[in-house]
Length: 356
Image (cartoon, rainbow, N blue to C red; front, top):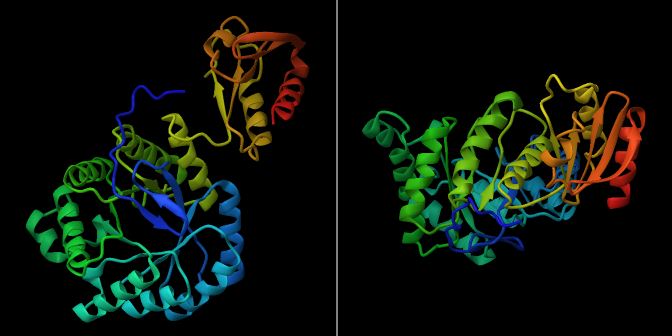
């Protein structure tokens, strides 16, 4: 289905994280970050494999110390998606991560000290052909920039990014990806807009510290949705205080709602009204629990009114609409058979299984 509402994506420069192309009009990539202790290789591998199965395409790992850095090689041997090492301040951790075979770094060069330290990291990254993500965060802006602007406004985030970019460009390094995150949605959106107009580097989108699912999903959907609809963004990470698999589900939900990428089943259901004569809430919850493992793009409608149900959900691949004691099963808005109310769920699940 063509997306008539989205602006033409900005064609940024292309980098490769492992074998995954980022930017240049390639599909928007879904990322996440492990929430285990990286040095605990067994737990970290288990979580990455679970994320791979959920659809994660690039994984980032915190590297707070040398023990974590030295565990990366063992982890990498057990997974297939590209790994990015998240480094703060210590250039030695970056060098060890590169030796362990990571596919990318997230490190701000201005924060790792002397120029010779930066040069060593950049030289090692060049030798291995791995990119560097400059990750600007509203909560950790340089003191002079924060003093200049007073608050972490969009212009402050962009200036910080440009400062770090200048260091890498000065060393002849161009394999750069950039993120400009804040927990405040308007500031984040404005920062990405300003940066996108000025630069051609691929952008990693996210709302920093978005919070628990109840609020974090809303912030992420609004912020990322605005930017993606404007053609801005090459990778996304939904940051939630929740299991990382939930981040993947939400990310694909955002992309799917914009017709950018489809993965798994999407449920269309009515909010119920006075015409509803069935337990639609319970029925939707049961359908949702039964289709979590579906990876094929599929739109399923579960409607509480057999009068308007098929028409309102005519774009769904398959669906049911129920009334008191009876219901209908339909495909693409056309009724294929009538069934009793108690058989609605079973008939729907049977059709879904045959669809897969």
